[in-house]
Length: 261
Image 1: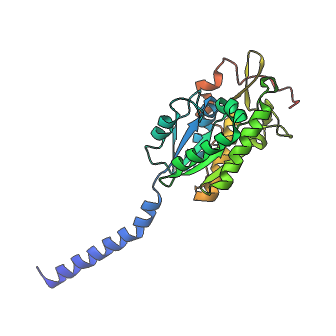
Image 2: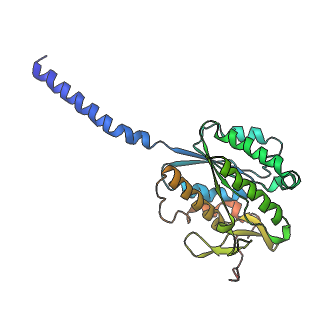
């Protein structure tokens, strides 16, 4: 082999190596950012909106795991949380509390301790937690005082743990005073239905408009703390709004806006 051929091959090898070194950081930087969501039936309704917001950013994958009846004191909860963590997520989004309200009122200190245990487990391998508190509840349910007590504990949890971020949901889903409302401005400022109707009355579960508002809030936290990119335009109005859960019960998210709040 001539000296010229050897020289050309060495030059080619150097150029290839240089090119690989140039793109390697960007390839590593484009690793999917895994988010897992856990919670109860209200969170289940929120998940399509959260998933649409985060995955529209392009580098995020959302693993949705919410089911009805989830609470931190319910049977099987430790196994449920352990299973949710099997994929080694970067962020865990949590929203629950309704199934724990009785115990919270009965022994607030014990629940506070339980929150610390759960937070430590979720973050033990380096994951961060985004904790959405309980949204305003219909007045007829009579649980607002207990909800506010629970939400105070969730807010204090974030103050004790640097790897937990608290999101208050009353400003996102409530009226001007933070109370329950069926309609309010959505992500784009247009008035939308945010909560369901059941048997002609207000229900605490979410419509697409409410799910999108929560998705926007979670996305804002991930953009600020982890550099998640900007979402695609009008992500809040995609096929996900037609998910069957938003028609359970039938017509739940198609009530008429009286314009009164």
